[in-house]
Image 1 (spheres, rainbow, N blue to C red):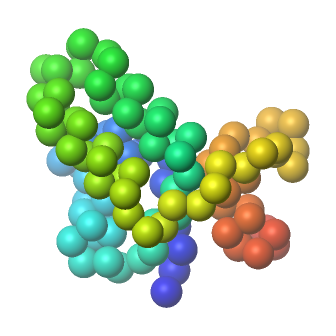
Image 2: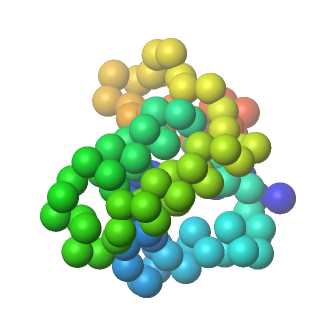
Image 3: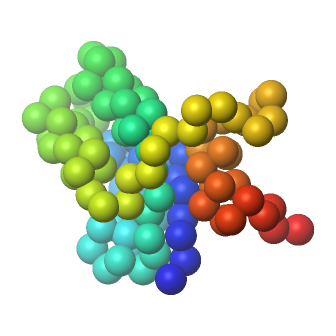
Length: 107
């Protein structure tokens, strides 16, 4: 099955609106169309955005935001946070993606 790393922005967007990001996350959460790969750093980033930014209360209730983060934090696809990034400009998402592909980049 396909292993997919979603950026924190996609995970946040999925929680607050019903657009493409939401459909992608629903494909994972309801139908398990792919295996989601995520690290604690990304979960923390999503939690920070959804729970610490008052302007988002307009789109998502704080309790629902916490439940959403709990689902992300407790499922079995969590991988360890990368200690170092292979490239100077890599984000944690890029490093996870690269490592989850067996250290081979698609061409």
